[in-house]
Length: 546
Image (cartoon, rainbow, N blue to C red; front, top):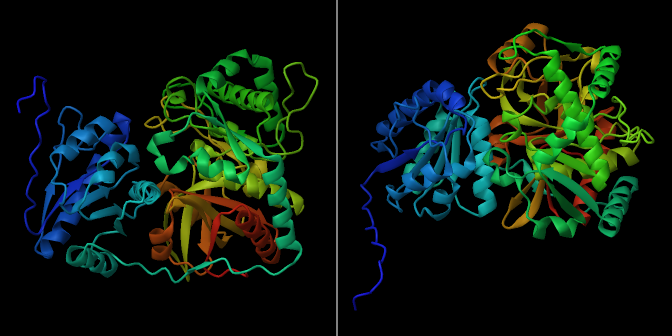
């Protein structure tokens, strides 16, 4: 029967050539970042294609390099949809990443792709493909889409090559997960009792996290749906970054100057200059400190228990970086901010937990950690880091954990006096702004990550040590990554590099300090009991005293 309407034309199924895989590359939304990272991406793709060629396979790039843009990344969700139209639905598919990428550019196509998927990244400090890979993997895990994953420093090591051989043969790569086990039954004790009591309090009285715009930088994995969040006793206050900016405009210059004077007196240094385009300026710092004041006042308005600022995208085009404000919010001792009428000091003597990049997995974790650590009389300052990179140093594999400046000063050697604020990279932060740069102090930490898998909330947690490296090694690692950002030298307990990479379901990891190993073990137990009572599936990773 002929339809009287204009009907869409069906698209014919494309055949899949034997021993052929298609390759795509998700990129940044920012042109400057894509252009800067393109050479590293070309190098990665050449190495990956050569490795497949040695196995008798052909790699077909599914989208062209755009000479006008100067790169060949998928740089928008719309472009991703168009690219997937030309990929056979059953074809083996490689997502190759040498840079940070916006997962939502490709998740729509990956969600419905029928062929086996392989995510592959460089393991490199300068070009953070491994960070992008972890974020993408977490998004695929959240949506329940099966995938395999692999990484390499130079794409010639046996681990990488054996992984590829397995994938072309079976469509799957198996990784060692022997370091992971379910949380065993916790015997009655002070720590498990504390965790249960705090969980009952949260379930009864509830809490609110304020989110200044969701979905930062395409991180689908960083959004926790209300249907999963609310049963924990946690609810969202959905806020707009435009409201934060509007509140910043109401903060007088004198209040920002008072915060700056407090930081100067505490010993924090600011590497300032006069060139707005390339240097940190006093004007940029004033705006950042107004953001700090504004965030506290809005949090007070809504009675928030934690707050998250997206910044990228949106605010980056209006005002300097949010990181200085974020790190101050996470610290117990910080410049006082009063209510608008001057009558009250807001969140006096306590941090306002901030979840960087509006990562809601971090929000829940930070809120729980804050309550456990506070009840135990510990410093409740928390931070998230990017799982940035790492190398062997002596007998240990030492991770480089870095985030763009939002580390609380109490986590740094020397505190405020050990911190210096440096300008953010203009490539990512066109409006500038300063960081809280420093070296994380040696000590014992509990690390964790809350994520969605199998349509439910799950938590991985373990123990690690922040170690001290010689100054020249720290400077070498900074030079290989982002020298303007704070750094932590982290050694995991009983988890090697590849185990962690294969298992971790985020580009972020949450960190909290304890004064010694025994106390860290106790705090981990209390935290595990808290999450388990909330109904979260808890996994312990590595050498954990549980």
